[in-house]
Length: 267
Image (cartoon, rainbow, N blue to C red; front, side):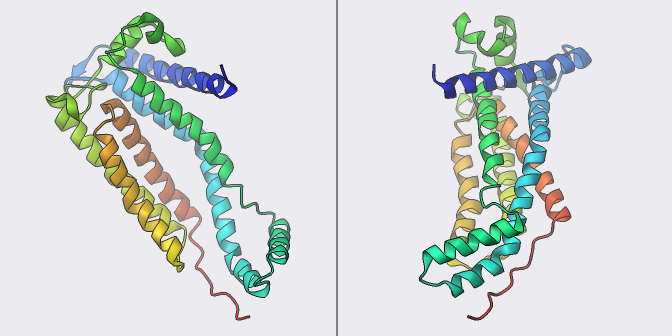
């Protein structure tokens, strides 16, 4: 087994342990109450699993956001250096490096949180997709610390009468439930991306404007297509994290308003 596989196996086990913990909490509080044909202990277990992970990662998001603001603040000086050292890439690179050192800013600071977040959200996605009633092999069911009974219970859990493991193609109640969740997922993705782009300040570069449009409209459209294939449990997870991300982005922008872009000094 590779180092990456071992790492992801640990992530899957940790995500599973967290999901089982929240399920046990809500199971103790709600028991087997069947309200609106929903297994609330598993539904709320997924919701609070996402909220816990997002809460733990919040300091990384704050650090990433501050790094983006710092880079935005330095853009006028960087443009001035680009004009001053036009055609001299070594001199430009040295000057920009000195600017970063002086201001104690790293252009790569925002990448570290992304690298740390990626395995966690891959783990969330994998664990929830793994909970399928079509998996009958006991060895596979009991991966990542599950018991066969827990796996069976989770893979047959319902949300408004639709199995969490089902998708739009499953028919019946799954069509309506999955459709509503997919609409919510696409809408919250669009709002979160749009707010993120607005919070990064104005963009006057055509390439940046094109990237912003692709992110704002392309990402939600891609989720609309892929959401049809996702199990309801995965769409629930994605929608929950989008709602959290939307509130988080609004909070960060309010605390750190975007810096108005200043024109570069004339060379």
